[in-house]
Amino acid sequence: MAVIDVLNIKGEKVSEVELADTIFNIPVKTSVLHEVVTMQLAKKRSGTASVKHRSDITGSGKKLFRQKGTGRARRGDVKSPLLRGGGSVFGPDPRSYAYKIPKKVKKLALKMALSSKLDLNEIVVLNEFELERIKTKDVTETLNALGLKKALIVTEKENEKLEISSRNIPGIKVLRSAGLNVYDILKYDKLILIKPSITEIEGRLSV
Image 1 (spheres, rainbow, N blue to C red):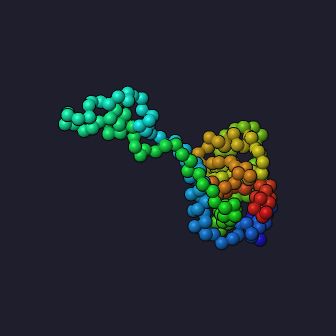
Image 2 (spheres, helix red, strand yellow; image 1 turned 120 degrees about the vertical axis):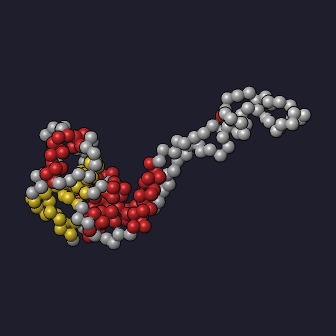
Image 3 (tube, rainbow, N blue to C red; image 1 turned 60 degrees about the vertical axis):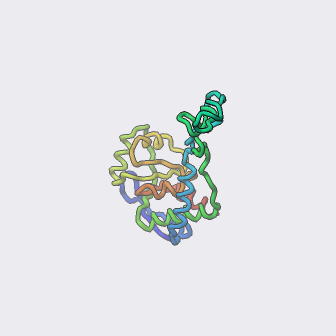
């Protein structure tokens, strides 16, 4: 098992913790990570692009002029796609871009993402991150003491003071262990794990 230092909010070592090799030390395949990240980004797409088709246009259904004898094209009504202001033929309609991949693949990708962070020494473990009040400045000072700028903070459970205090800090995101995902792990430079969250993560991924 890999052993990593546990720090306090001042950046001082207070203890050590072991990380399970079956979760934090497995071979990383970029193809698997790419597949899961692509799926996550597809689910985030709004899919609201839309145009008005011929049936959606408001206008008279009367034929513009007689069929024969004018020397002009055989026009229908003003809603024709060939006329300005008419309906669109092949334009987009609202749709969902979401699709599913096997649960085993998602779980494997999550383990690989964690393993890649450990391999690059981008995991920081804190014994706790408790705040006395809701204050952005307090979080900023702690992050500066740890030398962190772009980081994902993973907590064991709801931490309202930390979540509210950090939401206006650029490059910082607080996430509960239950919502840990591949995209967020790879997006941020550092992964900050509050010590109790490690047990939660290992319990979730060892099943």
